[in-house]
Amino acid sequence: MAGSRVIVLVFAICTALSVAACREEGDVQISSLKFTGVEQVDKGALANALQTKAGSWIPWGRKRFFDRRAFEADLKRIEAFYLDRGFPDARVRSFDVKLNDAQDKVAVTLDISEGEPIRVAAIEVIGFDVIPERELKTLRETLPLQPERPLDRQLAVASRDRALNALRDHGYPYAEVALREEETGPRAVRLIVQANPGILATFGEVDVRGVQTVGEHIIRRQLTFKPGDTFTRREMRESQRKLYGLELFEFANVESLEEPVLMNPDVPVRVTVAEGKHRKVTTGIGYGTEEHARARIRWEHLNVFGGAQKFGAEGKWSSLDRGVRMDYREPYFLAPHFSMSFDGEAWQAAEPVYSTNRLGGRATLRHQANQQNFWTVSIGSEYQRSVITDEALQDFTIRDELIALGLDPRGDITEGTLTAAAFDINRNTTNSLLDARSGYLVNARIEKAFPGLNGSYDYWAASTEGRHYFSVGSRAVLANRIRLGATLAADDLDLNVPFYKRYFLGGSSSVRGWGRYEISPLSGFGFPIGGLAMLEGSSEVRLPLWGKFGAVAFLDYGNVWTDAHDIDVTDLRYAVGPGLRYMTPIGPARLDVGYQLNPLEGLLVNGEPQKRQFRIHFSIGQAF
Image (cartoon, rainbow, N blue to C red):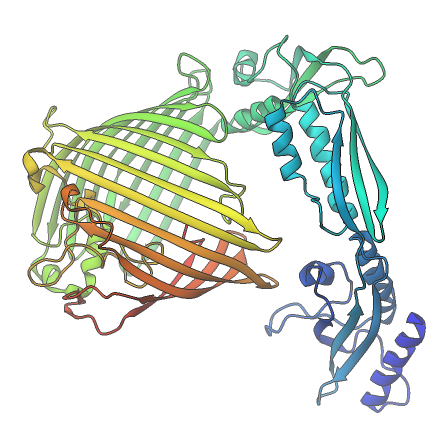
């Protein structure tokens, strides 16, 4: 049946082209490939499984050409694709081919009858008593294949692998997991995941290979396990991540050498590394119409004192900005999981409308318990002096740019030294840094500025943020964020807080109905001047459309108050709107249109009363 359809298709193309003999295969481009009747599987995944693909509509994009043999094979691939996902009766019902007027492109439409799937009535997990009940419950809830879903063979295998890894992460390297199906009714099966844990094992001796100039003790101290500890692949992965974090190795691998036949209770481990270059110099020379001649040089030395320390120095010079920066990092400070870093700079920026001089440094103690959790304690001091020209102060169109640079647009000269200590804590369980679909992020910061060591400011500041990502079905994601911050100035004097520590909201990653820094207390003239307390939040529904394109609908809210005593959760600004997303290698490119539900009365934008209640934002990366 499939072969006869292909013959009909080829005959139709040849007739439409009005030639005596069929043209060479590859002459006819595929302008589009569409599916009808596809409702229970992902169309994108189905299209990716086929050799017959639509070419790019972009003139310089890749073109795709019709191939009879590939199309014939694709008719069989579609049935195999559906069978693998639990649809044994799926068939290609018919197809339609339309030739364009120029007779060089075809649009192919495939009509598919999916049929009824075989569904998973229940999933039984047997033989996993060695795993704590709480973690076993989490395992059941996070198996890729879940009850009431079609019997997807790939998800079933992924579920088995996840169950097997759970046992290996709890000390059972010789565990075996098997899948078994039992019919429970018409088109319904019970999936049984049965385990044989084997023996409880511990880590044995560690063999380190590949070291040359790096001491073996450096590698061993990065390992998060030692001989005699309960065996777990989780600690092996964490150790490998820490080895790469040293930046000393081009390759690092931590592998266990268990022998299933002998089932040795002490599992030896091999660590293999390949060292990279420990000294690097990067330079850059150029010319621009604004900067004129510019030059940059950076020198880095890894393992500078033989203990995996990192030292870097950078210098830059141009007519607009110049200076030097230095940084030093001690990856192992007194105990595992602790590191210490020092940063310092002397920098001068001299733009046509402003100039800034900065001199200061900071020391940071960091504790990284694992990939998800860390906290830091830091102390630093920085002197800054900024001068803004009268022309810039009177040009209201660049006001937001001055604020972004930390400059106070209310006066021409700002000078002071910020000496402060801070404590930060962070937990991140999200599954992706660029486009999270599950998990949460929580962070908090407390900062104290004090007038000692020539400090010009005196305040307490606290801020916190929470984000949560939740998958809805197999496609949509519900994302939520809330952020709160407050600063208490000593003696209630604003002069005790530097301007660049004031809060502003609005922009592409904030309350999107307003422009950058437009939500804040206003001056007597209607200009945003920032405040010392802030609350903002967002909720988004993210849904893929087709290919790399997606859409969102969002609700943003927030406000900034003059000081912490003025916080009023009933006094918030709201914005709603839609957005488009296009996935790129560096994150989604996004276009958002935000509409103000309650405009900020008296707000001046570019020196004039606000003329519209919506803003259009384009950026790279999700809003949060």
